[in-house]
Image (tube, rainbow, N blue to C red; front, side):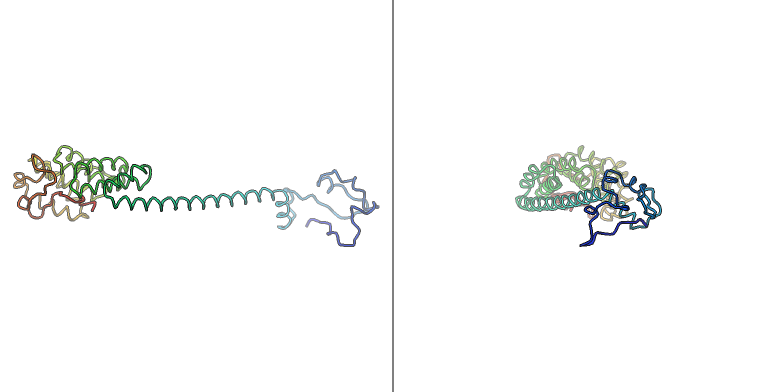
Length: 296
């Protein structure tokens, strides 16, 4: 245990004002010395054993070590606590600001959504670098598709695919783009986008199954039974997507007959005109006005 002098009591003579004595040399004797030098200097007639307390001292208890640590590092500890406190306050303030901005964007998004595809595109143009801005392009494309404006839908699905990349919304945009091209009668473009999506290993099964199914429809209409059967076989492996696996089985059984039917808009048929039920075999759906099946 380190010896510490007792605190000065009221009324007691002060060391700084008392006169030097045999065991109390004047202040000049130690005033300019370090703690270590004072510890080594032994007062005349003082039989106490004094030890130097520093980082190398192993005999002190926890109280001594805490006292020594605070003496040497107290200011740094205070600075660290203040720095952490300022950081926490700044972080909380930033979160509150972000929440305020997001709330304002959501309200504006809703107002523009009520205006239809045009309002959504205006919102996307005003906020191109935000998640809601990218979502506005995708929803504008859905709106055009529902309204039978397949050329506008195709253009905006293509733009949405560029914005979203290969994630889930990008896959939805890719399928919408392919089906919009299919509705405009662009069979070559539709075939390419459908097969690209169907072969995308990282895409969700429902998108791949629907893309493969409509690729089979395109090849059936073109009279390419071999390619049609190939893509129907691809659909069959997706057991978790029953709507398209069931339709694929029906389509495969009817390929000889369907090769002679007009299933795809084009060749003079208005893109927005739904196919008549007489031209559509039972159990087989074709893309008409409305969201692509996997995006609904």
